[in-house]
Length: 192
Image (cartoon, rainbow, N blue to C red; front, side, top):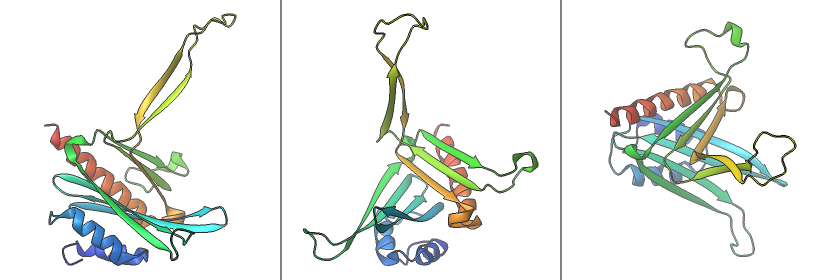
């Protein structure tokens, strides 16, 4: 963990979610590159009657976007003890083709420039996963019953991270916006 930025180390520790495993995975993926921005998101979800936790860490270097994800898995008939998996993906910045930031603000009429958001959804696409939404096509004639095939849209859906003030705190929402700005700037500068 010595090579990781001190604030990133602190946020990984604060998440309390297998911090040494998360840090080991990130250190391997960073491969000595200097960290420019990051986001740590710890999330708990319910799977039937079980609480499942996972953490996503996004790290930005001058050349790559590192996506780290750590999950825990309960013991089952194949695994006698619980276990965790930590995976990282290193994406070259020139591959990132979309950075979508959705802000949710309460009382938008009183929102001021630079004001806080109640929640932020950061969606990043680099072409590894695409979503296709299809629906039957029509000609516009309500009486027509001919088959016009299908119409639809495709969109990158590689990664989406949702943070909110209520669940994650004001600092994490701000961190998500700052990370989105840094990633947008890094990918824009690659186009010049």
